[in-house]
Image: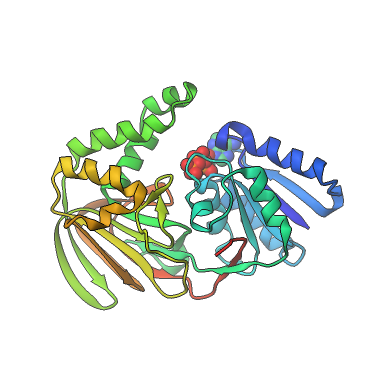
Length: 310
Ligand SMILES: Nc1ncnc2c1ncn2[C@@H]1O[C@H](COP(=O)(O)OP(=O)(O)OP(=O)(O)O)[C@@H](O)[C@H]1O
């Protein structure tokens, strides 16, 4: 049985239409699929847990139709169900997971690609735990986990009053741009202690620290241009000791992955990281924001099975 998990508000409801059209056009029998719709933020976590625990042997594939936020929720709902085969149809505004997996960004083409063959590829999500909570409260991220500047931009944009106005005017891209400009002036660089695969470093004047499973974040920015999906290592990008104006330049070059040439940008690969901060640090996981003093990060050891090209 195919299960569709559809976020009806992502992409202004595009997902609902795309799935209906696909099922009709391909004469998919009603007994071969079920559709579930998310009703509120966080609902996909609960729905996925229920669906996976009740039907885990009957599900051929759980097809997530939404944006990166919906996929993040499904991944976390399926945290204890590694064997659940997953696919993602991008109808959101960012869709970085589909970019990272080299899937078509057109939802209709993506659905066709998903059903073209029966094979799945392994995918190793990132796992993170904040402030020494019990391990059962560990969360997963599909694309990236970021600390500092980009997390504050995401937080400011998500909580802003202007978000709904720009969205109503179909100018959602300006939500992030305005958040970025305000944050450039307000952000205070951080001091962090970072433990990378057992080696401790004290870092000063940190603007951003991003841990990536694949190249993309923030809706198509190539933050880790050399990243390839793999079992062992994350691609880490640190931006430090940079002027506010040069950071603007960085955000213009990051779409082409050229920011790594700047002397203020450091990149390396790592398997385990621990981040410690004396002050509260804002972070985002696939766009979801939170705050912490401490975070430990590692790759999931057992792969998930995901529809992807590479
Ligand atoms: N019925 C609903 N009403 C309101 N919000 C919902 C509903 N269902 C899901 N959501 C929330 O909608 C939010 C946005 O979803 P999602 O991130 O998938 O789309 P997006 O923001 O358009 O895409 P992207 O993250 O790729 O930019 C998520 O936080 C999700 O929890």
